Length: 136
Image 1 (cartoon, rainbow, N blue to C red):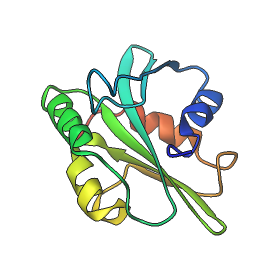
Image 2: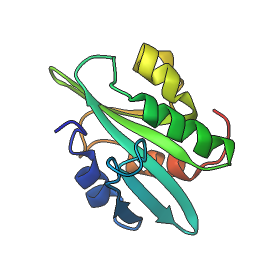
Image 3: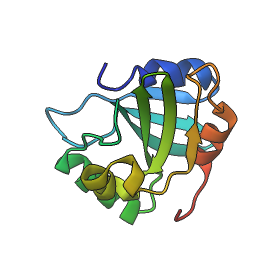
């Protein structure tokens, strides 16, 4: 469960989003796990899980997010942090991929931090973040 089961959790909790699962590691490394589209807005989400603050981000993922961001794309990391009783979700813009790779969750500004596990996460805030254009 290297992605924290986030692919299935996002589909279940954001059912109005048209989701596509992406599996291209062999032919195009770095492409995120999922592509979503809602009300004409398209976005990409790389799902990660950690039990600490560090997050495993590959150099190819950094390069992909950097290029897509430079072209105006909406890209994100969804990081599930599970540690003891903590079950948190962080939504981080893809433009911070290198900071996430080097310094973990604490090194990046996040658009959303929600706690309490999937049933209690603020799915409205998550969708708003995925749809929002901007630099933060």
